[in-house]
Image (cartoon, rainbow over all chains, first blue to last red; front, side, top):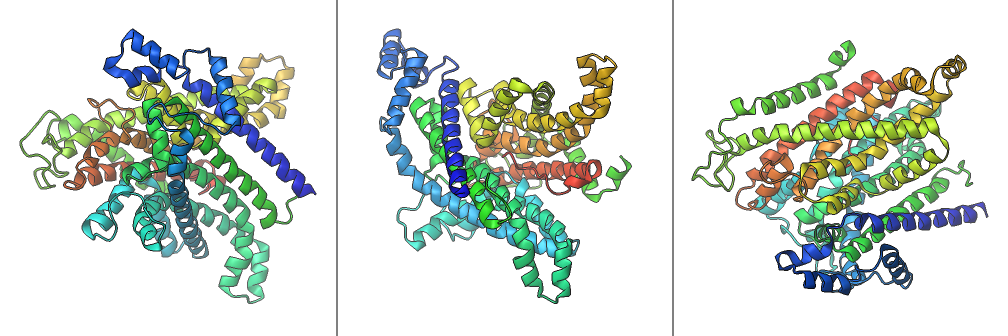
Length: 315
Length: 280
C-alpha cells in the first residue's frame, strides 16, 4: 500500500515537472523577437511575406492564446507541424526515436558494465599498480571531449582497420546491422561515462570494503569474489543506481555530439536542427520528449531504492 | 599550499596547466608561424616543419591551436567567474533569506539542473543567438549557476543557523555585515572545491558547443571550432581533428588532476566523490 502511494505520488510529481519544463520552454523560446520567420525567409523577407508566414504559423496571435492552442493540441497528443520539414512533429520524432533509444541503451550498458567492473577491481586492489593504471585510464577517458573520442574511434576502427562503417544508422534490426552501426557510437558515448562510473564505484566500494561486516565475512573465510559481489556490492548499489541515473541524464546531452559525429539519425540531432532553425513546434516537441525521458529515469531510480535496499521505507 | 605541492596529482596537473598556459600566452612568440601565413601546402601531413600538419588554407595547425588557446581558456575562465559570482549570489540569498524566495529560486534551479546541460546550453543559444562570445558564456553560465547556487545554499544554511551567528545577531550586527563577515568566510572552502570541479566541465562544454558550430565566431576560433573545421576533411586529414582534439583532452586532464589535488587538500572527505563531467 505504501509502495502504491509512493509510486503514485512520484508519478504525479513527474507529470507536474514535465508540465513545468514544457511551459518554461514554451515562453523561453518566444522570449526574443528574432523569430523563425526571419530565419526561414532570410534574404527573401518582404513585409508582406513576413506577415503572411507569421499568420500561417499562428505566431501573430498573443502569447497566451498561442500557449492555450499549444496545450489544447498537446492534450490531443498533437505536437503541431514542423515549420521547416512540413511534417508533423510526432512523425519526425517517432522516426528517429528508436535510433536514440538503442544508442542510449548500448551506451549506458557499456558505461555501467565497464565502469562497475573497473571500479570494483580498483577498489579491491586499492593503491596497487593496477588501481593507479585503471584510474589514470578513466581520467583520460572522462577528459576527452565526446567528438574527439568519436573521431578517434572512426579513425582507428573505420578508416585504418575498416572494421565498421564510418557513418549512418542501422537500417534493419538484424544483429549484424546493429553490431556494425551501433558499436562505435555506443563506445564513443559510453566510454567517457564509464570513467566516471568507475571512479565513483571505486570510492564507495573502498569505503564499504573497510567496514566491519566485510571483515567478518573475510574472517569467515568467504571467497574474495563472494565478498565483493555479494556483500560489498549490495551496499554500494543504492549510491551506484542514483549515480547511474544522473549519468544517463547527462548522457542524453552527449547524444547531440555523438549523433552528429556519426551522422546517425536521432533525438539529439533533431533537437539541434530544431534549435538552429528556430523551429518552434519541433523544439517544443523534442524538449517534451527529453523531459519525459529525464522524468522516467528519475522515477525508475527512485523506485529501485526500495528493491535494492529493503531498509528504505517509502514515504 | 605545502600539501598541495606534495600531492603528486596536483603537481602533475599543475605542471600540465602551467605549460599550456605559458604556451598560449606566449603564442605570438613561440608559435612557429602566424595565423595569417597562408601557404600553398594545403592539408599537409604532420612533419618536422608543420608538427600538426596544415589546414585547408595551408596554415600551420599547431600555430592555429596556440594562437586560439588564450581565447579558449580565457573564455572558460570568464564563464567560471561569472557563473560562480551569480551562483553565489543566488545561493546565499536563497539560503540566507529562506521562505518563498528560497522555494521559487530552488524550484527554478532544480528545473534547470534536471535537464541535460548540453541541451539547456543549446536552447539558450538558440534563443539569444548562436554565434558570439556573450551568448556562449551566457549559455554555459545558465547551466552552471544552479549547481553553484545549490551547493552554496546548502553551505549557507548551517552557517546561518550557527550559534556564533545568532550571538552576533544578538549583539546587533547588521544583516549584511553579518552575512559578509560571518557567513561568507565559511563558504570559501566549498567554493574552491566547486570551482575546481567545474572548470574542466566548462572547457568540455564550450568545446562541444563550438564543435557544433555554436559560439565562437569564425574569425576568432576556439579549439572546439578548430576541431569542427578539421572534421570536414577528416577522411583525408585526420590529424586536423586528432591533434587539436588531444590538446583539449590534455588541458582537461591537467585541470581535472589539479582540481582533484586541490579537493584532497582542502576537503579530504570528498576524495574521489565529486568528479568533473557532471556537465558535459
